[in-house]
Length: 499
Image (spheres, rainbow, N blue to C red):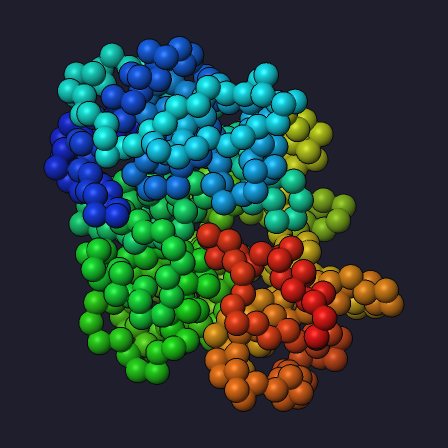
């Protein structure tokens, strides 16, 4: 399977006018995109970028980010995406951790201020604007020596929602192979275009872009977290055949709809990054008839997606995230690392060619994670006899409340089935008596009629007493990351507010 760079170079020569990226009123065909990337690659080499050097991308515009990503690869460098929304102290920590030679920032923007202690080793800062880059002749591509398929190509930092972010070191071959395998499962063609408003620096944003490119398709990107019919309008306006995002995107689209959406619905929908509740799946199929809904499970440590559940498997394997891609294998193991029988819940281990090389400069964490049985995901789930995987949540999603195991995901699903909320999230909070207790955060569809006592009465009919939330916190909106994941720290802070 070709690497991402080989795919881009081939399509730039054979189908230069084929649309690749549309964003903020700017459009790039494969040829224009590749020639701009070649121009920037040449500038990086001319300014002293050496092979294997790391280049950090502090960019949130889709064209700036993706053109620059390929420019770094064409110059033989290693891409280090940075989350532009992080506080200055967190960005400084990531920069110090990854030690990039160059930091690319938007033209007209201000580079981050570094403390005196780290200024001596600060990277060179260069500004970039993809729209202003000249288009080098295709011959200029021949003069470049891109990063090789088996060389380190990217350091992707994990979200850090459960601790300090870890730098996932990944080869170019694995990045491209992941995209190609997903494109095969989705049945994509060059006529497909996916709409995303996941930031480009997240693993999911990169994966969506490369997946559509794998079969010659395109991407339309808009910043901002869209929801409801507004998202469907954006998809139709961009001429997209599909959408890729978090479960929260689908939840916010289907919850307000009572009747089938008349026109402009996408052909396919990719939901990944978190659990997709069964009631949301049922509602989506009713209000978006004919929609091909793909449920996925992925990890930064495998460059994106790991398991895919196709639309034709949805009814028979309700709640599953599907089967592993290609030669990837998922096993379920107990605390001692021994495999568990099909149907039993344990920790998910992953093995195969897409698994990362290592965590950046973390040999102890790498050794603990890359075991003889495969990569320890920290996620818990089960496997059936046909190889389908069900994810029950992360280690933190299964808590002990007074000695009883409680699944936060099951509580979240029960809340959704009540039909009372536009959005929900369930987290664990510390408790002096019980150890940890579930706390439900909800956005009432009708705040005027919201009643906590009524919610608890309804939950008692759906959940055992040990799984009832300790408290229900009503909010106007659940704070989420750009990829749709709940911001745990912020939610727990809101829980501590005087009420």
